[in-house]
Image 1 (spheres, helix red, strand yellow):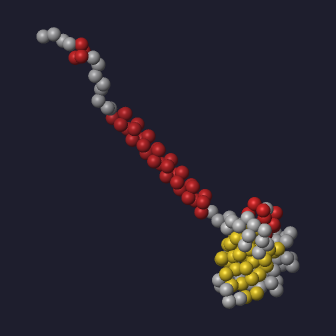
Image 2: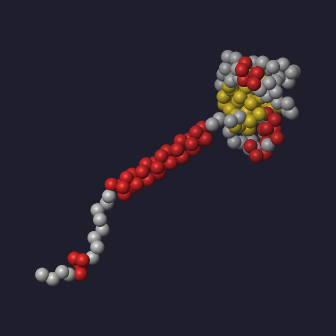
Amino acid sequence: MAVTESELSPVAPPPTASRSRRRSILVLVVLALAIVALLSQGLLHNLNYFKTVDEVLASRESIGTGVIRLEGVVEPHSIRRSNVGTDFVVTGSRGSIPVAATGTPPQLFQANIPVVVVGHFASASSTTFLGSSIMVKHTAAYIAKYPSRVKAPNGTVR
């Protein structure tokens, strides 16, 4: 019996356990990285930052009509209730912005308190902020931690 050349050529060994283990680990690492990337992107997009009145006044052109969260102190004697909502003025240390909010404001809503209003400007050149939601979110602990941020125009801290 003669041995042919094809019978003498090397044959690849069957996959070993270490090769399968490395492939499994690689797949798990890729899956873990994908999950971390998706979670971090989801968390970053769901963070709700707000802009103070002073920040909005300083960058009014770049904000345009995009939806933002506006933080400021409700100016005394500026609250006017209507059948569609509430009009008021929020102030910062360098200026104020009139707000026309739809819906019913929270029970704690009053003059001289810090609020966050979700909404947008009526147009790119408008000075009126159209609010869709008013939040009274600052607790006494928050005010104690950030006294200069939530100080009312008359100097009081609530």
